[in-house]
Image (cartoon, rainbow, N blue to C red):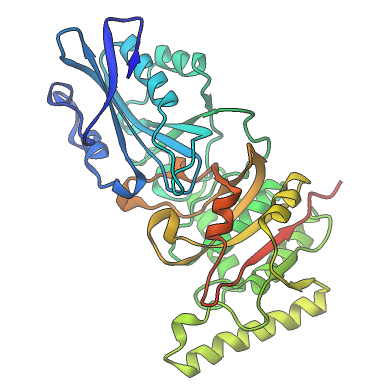
Length: 384
């Protein structure tokens, strides 16, 4: 329970819907934010009540398992002071910690621009409570698009030092382009200028074109993705050296879904053999070993960007191989940009652009296959 200077009390209550008195005059579209199914994201409802017990405000938070971040989905309050008190309470809220839910080190406030955003006075309160506006994302998924009903902005608070290195965020616009987008974000972080800050059409063209060159139909496997990243890096002149692949298996990867169709499986294996041939031609290193998470963290601390092949099961309950990009380390967590946004459960780019994942949880999710293998692509720092 949080006491405030105003004659109100803020406490966590059951459910996710705001108390009835607060819903009056609120649009159905905004109330839908409170009603969407978020159980896997462990939602928390904080309600402010006055001395008579009447609800005068509410805040809703949520966060992916195995990440050290929470998102403030929305705050409803007519009074600016009550709104600010709820913001502070949501920032400082401490959900129970367990193996799947580490203590949060980052809190992101989601500003819903289609619902009027926040006033200047409330922006001042965000700043006073330590929230800083996040950089505008690259036009891609609906929540990044100016004027889209789903458009949102982000304000971030970090328990300690904020990450110094974040890639410009781009959300994958197809189900299969995570590898291409992770590589493009890494190159953009180095200054490639490959994304257009205004043109969704141009950005999607770049996304699809990169995927077509790197794909193993439909996924991007580590060597093929590294080869295309190396070619793009060489064209830009921004990468100090070739990427390198660290892959713990010597056999083909990401072919599990084709086990019942040998011709389809062999096509993917042939594509991987061609990627290996091109890697050898480029002189691109492929190390066949299990890389430990501590080594990944050290590489990132030293300025490298690392693309991680992960399993989405633990993060969004989707058993799918997936690529994400790690660009910094803060408070014992890798800071990850995840191209995937899980719309059905209320996610936006705010859930994915700066996701701190503790190293123990990185160890958990960077595994795919049976037996499990680990694959990463290491991009050296920018050329100087």
